Structure formats: C-alpha cells, structure tokens
Length: 240
Image (cartoon, rainbow, N blue to C red; front, side, top):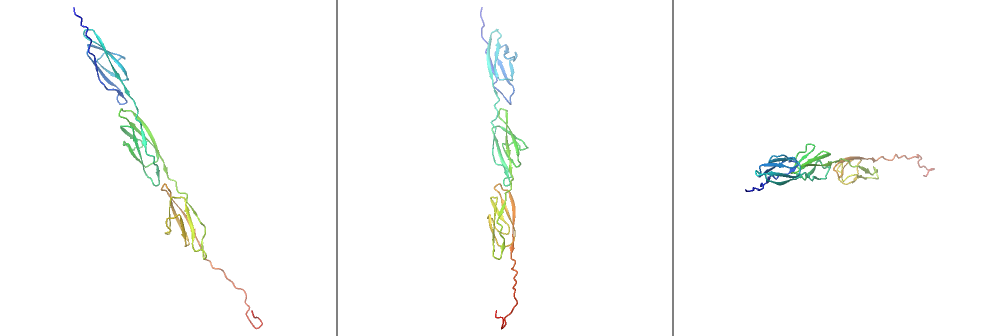
C-alpha cells in the first residue's frame, strides 16, 4: 500500500493592479483539479478582481490533497499633482498671456483652449485644466486672468498766459509713464509754450493704456487806450 500525499504545485499568474484606468484585473491559478478562491470569487481557475486586497486560492489535486497560494492586488488611485505656472495678466500693452500646466500625462483646458500643456490666453476669466495621470486618475486646477485697462489720471498744471511782457509759459503734465505733446512740443512732462493755442498731451501709463488732456494758452496783446487831456497853448501870457 502506497500513499500519494503529494501537494498540488499551485501557481497564480497575472501581475496587473487596479488604477483609475484599470477597474478590474485577472488572476489565473494552476496546478490542481479544482479551485476555490477566497472573497467569494468562485471556483474557476481564473478570477476577475475589482477590489484591492490579498486573495487566496485553495487548489485540490486529483489525489485529494490541497495547497494554497495568495496574490495581492493594489490600487493606484493617486491623483496628479497639478500645477499651473504663469502670473502675467492682460493690459493695454499685454494682449495675451501664457499659462502652463504640469503634473500629468494629458491635459484638457476649459474655454476651448485645447489639449496642450501650454495655452495662450487673450480674454479675462477663470480657466480650468483637467490633468489625467498615467494611471488614469484626474485632477483639476484653475487660474484667473485679469485685465488692467485703467487709464492714466492726467493733470496739467500751469495757468499763466502770454502777453507783451510774458513771451512764454510753462505747462506740466502728470499721471503717466511717458508723454507726447502736440504741436511738436516733445516728450517731456514739462513744456515751454510761446504761441497761443490749444495743446494736447497724450499720456501712456505703465500698463500701456493712454489718455489725453488739453490746455489752452491765450495771448493778451491788447494795447493801452491812451488819452491826453489839456488843450491850452503857449502865449505871451501863458508860458507853460
């Protein structure tokens, strides 16, 4: 009488794990005549697994001996670490700005900006990028673009006007980064005016926005209204 007490040579094949993109994985046992999986996975040699954990298969050989083997399933549900770089905003001088997303395998921007990591934005608003990692998990981040369209607050100081004794007057503009006067007066904030007329200064702010202001210079060239009184004349009796 012999005793065949040899145990089944149990093997489990399959190494895939779960992720946001992979919602089920296959494990296949071999080495026996019948199989019984833990966790209610049934009695087939092949089991479909949808949850992370450690699974055991009990294999019964044709001689009635049993042996077990285990397999571990993990779930990579880590989200992409989304970052958006770029902080410039729109202004009269800056008509478009750049934003760049990072942290994933693929990108999808809102507002029809497309699927590139880097986008060019020309309109104010809040923009969202959806980033999908290599494991299929997604995360979002937002960036806000504003527009500084504020106009320079222009002031022109100086109120003197021309006359026969005042042949030039000073006007000084303020409120901007650069200045341009009409009538060929140049680009200084302060100008010297020697002719009557209306003068315009165009002021450009640091944000590139422009505004204008005007000043009027008059010339009081009116002559004195002279009158001489006295009509007596000299004679032998009138000596002065």
